[in-house]
Image 1: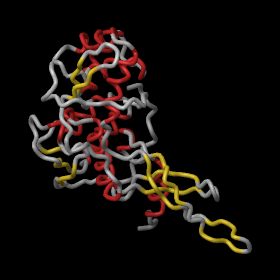
Image 2 (image 1 turned 90 degrees about the vertical axis):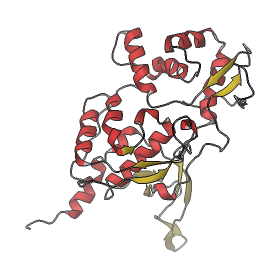
Image 3 (image 1 turned 45 degrees about the vertical axis):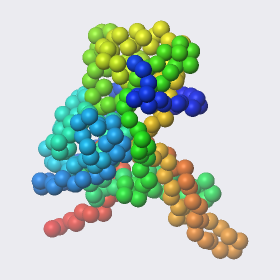
Image 4 (image 1 turned 180 degrees about the vertical axis):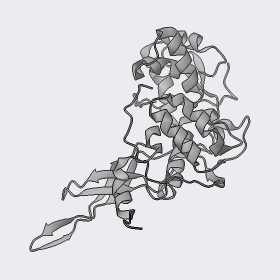
Length: 301
């Protein structure tokens, strides 16, 4: 969800309360080799600390392994013209004792970034930026272990219970799950009778799925349509209040040079606002890494 409100959301303890548009295919570089041998599982921390999964999962880590060659081929085929909904089934084997569709969106993107970093070790995740002082083109290399992971607070529990400001109704809410994609997909195909739609059309049914009352998505969409805009904005703001996963801003130091009187010196400008937005399409390296391939080639045997 995107932040649209500055309202401070007060979440009550449930124990004390009463009852995506198609994107152009990137130019993938097939020459960066993924892992080809059977990879071992690694336990990595979850940004959510596993708190949304306490009904069936008691760990704050998840067992995951890098993508294998056949999985890389399947992922590439999806981005070449298939549905992103198929990605969950392709990635099913990379997790141990956990279903992909059960992950929150924040945990999911963090795991995808881990897959990208550990499947293509020779082609790291890089974010380009231009120094505002010397105009040097820099590249910030992303290392997950060096990033400050955004975590859920220790007292987080689902459902989250809030009272809406206008209607005064109490609603129970949960965080978005990756499995919501398939439900929204079926709902919109049935309601709109088409196979593609934009963000404005999927926003409301996606929000409806965060209402944790056991009702059908159609019922909760209709419920949202009866509420005042301010009530709907507050429901959306609850998800924003508990965002977790990868930070959206990175820090890097400029390596360019600038003039200091009669000599050139290293610029050294520290940029603390490099925007980092890891997307599903970043799961495979693109043609930006062709320089690595060319430099690694030896001609003549």
